[in-house]
Image 1 (cartoon, helix red, strand yellow):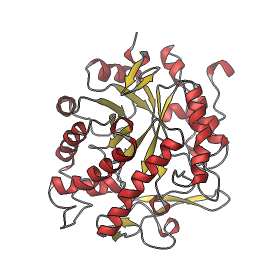
Image 2 (cartoon, helix red, strand yellow; image 1 turned 90 degrees about the vertical axis):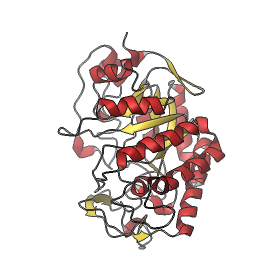
Image 3 (spheres, helix red, strand yellow; image 1 turned 30 degrees about the vertical axis):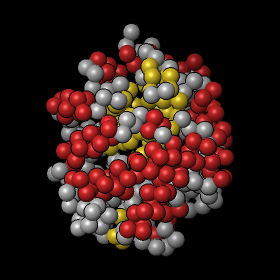
Image 4 (cartoon, one colour; image 1 turned 60 degrees about the horizontal axis):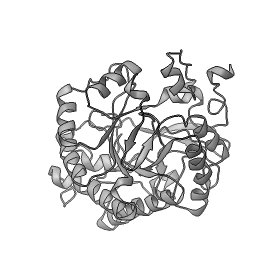
Length: 365
């Protein structure tokens, strides 16, 4: 039998298989307040045959948002909104981690009380847009603007916000948290030389560029424990104006530091477009030698590619994104080699149950 469908463990968690539902922004929260709701509980419950669900990216504070209708996990109302969702996932046998998110410069004054977004350096990301919607759900992609440079007080506050949000996520019923350190968002902006031009202790050398990530990780570990912490990194993704020539060795250095902290897992966000760069096998081998705890990979994986990376020992869990949107019974379809339903891209962000909870399972067609 394919390793994908074998039971396994993630630190102290028993997983019913090695399939992960990847974090995917769907922008369906209740307003005002970016509050998770009953429709979201249905959505996640439908897909809870996965061994592990990683929630959609979730704000840690008022100033961490970059897209309309995305959830938070720092207010009482948001925590209460998540509780039926995590219970629904657990009732179906899935574990669930909350992805903690600060977008940094990938934002707009609309989400910042008309103030500038914050970032390591005052550099606007080129050809980068965010989705902004009105109260009726009519949204548009809008260019990001130049942010302001974070001072030490900003840095300290955001680190505390990550730690506080992690504590609230556990109160909301999540089994752990995933710190989003990839895909061009705030932590990734500190890691890369093209977005981080600082001359203080957070810029310049690899050690300095890693400092913010590791201070966030340490603060979160102090609140919830290393066994409840995962980190997402994206060494080969360059969109959102993030092409840094030093990012791969920086990520490998990060991996050493994260292994020393004995976190639950590292989640590699891999490029998932048609002509994306192929990740060299030498990188996977070196990463596996450095990081011996659980590795999750995500990026247009088929069952065949998933089996290959699992069998070679380069990863322990494989995350699926878009196929999980249109196939709530993805685990069963993969296991039985059934055809996968197509995704309606027009309904990905915002709206109602259309293109969200109305995708049928095979036995319901």
